[in-house]
Image (cartoon, rainbow, N blue to C red; front, side, top):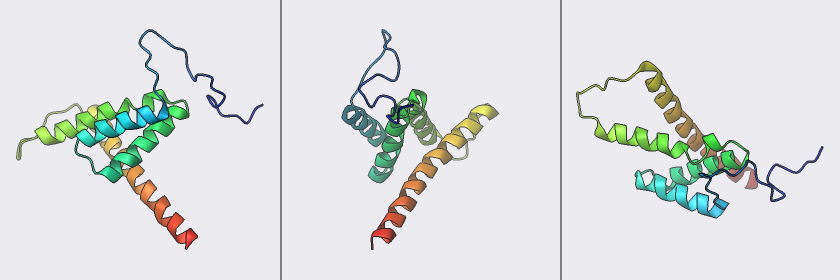
Length: 124
């Protein structure tokens, strides 16, 4: 069994299909940062979220990579579109999904900040 991670030798993680778009890590990072920044997210949060999404893709989880930005964008648009005092009617399972996704994004940000704080403590 080889200790080389999938894709490290230049092999593709999945098969190309007619609708496949291949991006380098730098291209995917830039695309993700532009997309999330356009939603008005803070720069620190954008970097943390994009790092996680790119890592997901590199680990072989394409569904949990850049396509997740669509769910984040939809949630941001929904939040902006709400009028004060007007409740939105939503399907409970969708509401639960959006709440989990919001908590996941917040968790990614918190996790990165904890790691950075611990790294700073360890290096001082």
